[in-house]
Amino acid sequence: MRFLPVFLDLQTGPILLVGEGELVRAKLRLLLAAGARIRWYATDGNRDTAGLDPEGVARIEHAKGDPLEADLSGLIAILCAGAGAVGAALSVRAKAKGVPVNVMDDLEHSTFIFPAIVDRGDVVVAVGTGGTSPVVARRVRESIEALLPARIGDLAGLIGRWRKPISGRISEFPLRRRFWERVVDGPIGALVLAGRGDEAEQALHDITDPSAFAGAPAAGVVEGRVTLVGAGPGDPDLLTIKALRALQDADVVFYDELVSPEILDRVRRDASRIPVGRRVGKPGIGQDAINRLLIDAAQAGQRAVRLKGGDCFIFGRGGEEIDALRLAGVAHSVIPGITAGLGAAAQFEVPLTYRHEALRITFLTAHKARDAESVDWGTLTDEKMTVVVYMGMTASPSIRAGLLAAGRSPHTPVGVFARVTRPDAQAAVGTLENLPDLVARIDGGPAILVIGDVVAHSAPWHAAQINQLASEILVAAE
Image 1 (cartoon, helix red, strand yellow):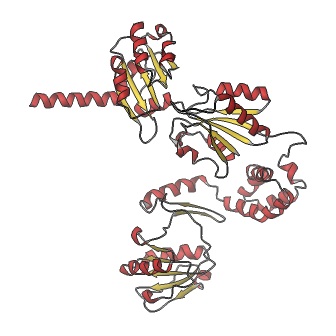
Image 2: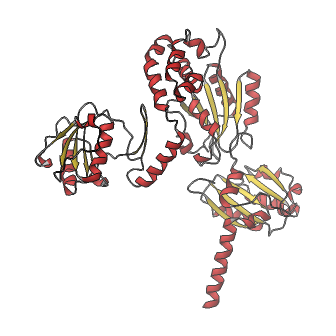
Image 3: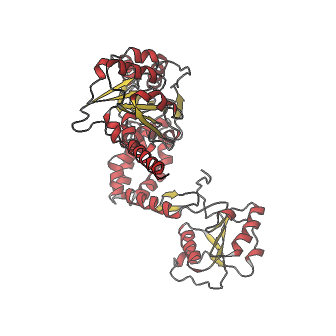
């Protein structure tokens, strides 16, 4: 993120606007809507304000002379739209004076940029792409426009008017937050969004005990809870809506090392984030210690999230944590996530089942060689069974040996799919006899091993076949 989104109060000082044509008039409309006072240098001499807000026009000062000699003191910012070479020259002066400057479509001479804006009164959403793609920003804005209720700004305004009075009556921040959540998500919020603001205002006024409305616990009763959330294999867009809500509601998040930074960015900004996972070859705090942290957080009244890569109940030790929470009498719930095996299947087009060819799936883990040696490979030799192995990179020689010894064909298609759904995802496909070599071609894990005929239907397998055919044609041509 190169540009930090910042909302300026444009009513605290003048804006210097330089330019001409429709570009500068678009900026005039935007600035006037924000209540700005504008000092405008019309570089073409055309100061026509027809079509602009008549009341806002009174806040426009028509400046004369050379804008390069303008007094820059006391300005909030400088905007150049349709200003040509004057914009670049004025930018040099602005930077020397420490005044923020935007030269339209010129990142080199701008210290801030204009986002695509969704304006709902008191609710304003700014969408930026670092100045690289206004069209993409506009498309995102259009999607947000479709999602946001038309009167969401009215709801924010209602809360703004009542925020201080309620703060004076509810001193505890967590309880105060729950109060406003119940207002926003309950009947009062629905009244505002339906255009019945007066009724909503009266309903807020009629709340005689805000703490009780917020659901304050009785003396000695703790309301903390733990939510186990499956984070999926890495792509934040694969989080469920329910998972996103849990991350936004959490007071504290205990997360695994496999949870991607992009997913952690979806956590509420003021929530505590505590890493509790471990990677291969690195010590962790241990499952008992994790269980204790979850229980302590809930018993302290916090809303805790246990954030796990993939799905909580597929080699995620979620069952052990649930047992500990039950024993401690802690309220809890589980939100499923997309497990890495399914993420790999979707990204690399591996149909884990296939009519007449693959009728069964087995998920297993083989973290170390001794894990692989303890598996009864004789139950996994059915050609119509797809075997999905988690954490199997280190144990790949033992996995190959076990399956071959049990009778699985050495020509069985296999795939190694690393860092699935992430930007640096990687695949290597081949046959069972070459499994360790395929693992060696992968630049680190985590990785999923898929063993079975279905791998021959995958996109990497088809790409490899095409490459092989092209090579044979070239050799024949020579």
